[in-house]
Amino acid sequence: MEYFAFWFVTVFAAIAVYRLLSRRLATPRARVSAMLRRYRALERTGLSEPECLLQLLATRSDWKSLSHRFLAELVSRLRSKEDIMRFISVSEDEGYQRKHYPDLAQQTNLDNAMSEIACLFARFGFRLQGENRYKEAEFVQKLALRLQPSQYFTTLPLAVTYHETGRHLDALPLFEQGLANFEEFEKNHRSDEQELSPAKCLGVEMELGEFRSRYRSLFEACRKAAEGALASLIYLSSFTEMLC
Image (cartoon, rainbow, N blue to C red; front, side):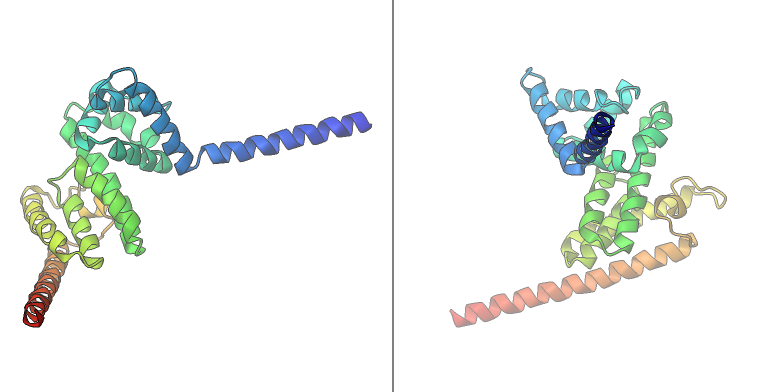
């Protein structure tokens, strides 16, 4: 009886330790550390940075079946190891590499595939922005912009994040580009079409005209804030010169 109890306690303890270690290995920090070790090991073989990044993607368990050309396109757009690792982390946290990427990897037009992935990231970033989690939103929105820099749903939300965090001068060119991108989208968009729409990519259920007006108002508010900040700097500079 005591022997049975001893083995029961031992097995129970082993299961508990295994679950604890599994959770630790699954944390974002542990995942990034593992990717860095893998990257450095690849780097020591003499591969270039793009080749290392491609191998890093191609040897992960959920990514192995994705086409080489699809993975190579991701590397060419994200470029740096920091962005690739951030991209992998967000994708695996949200399960994109299992739910979405296999179908997208089979598309002939890789630019369209990248737009769809940017759409996924933009929607996630927009949700974080709506929760006032601006630092996390920016992290995700920058990845969306890297993947597809010429879409309104990657430029306008990041512009708002910059505006809301006081970086008005950084926001202005993104607002200008995003509004121009949206105007182009409106010209080519059918009323019954959902592809890359605000509803799909940002979770915003509103008419296109209303969406345009909303972001144009934000752009005007940002422009005025930037002018005010610039006037304050000029005044402060003049005042400092007077003191000198």
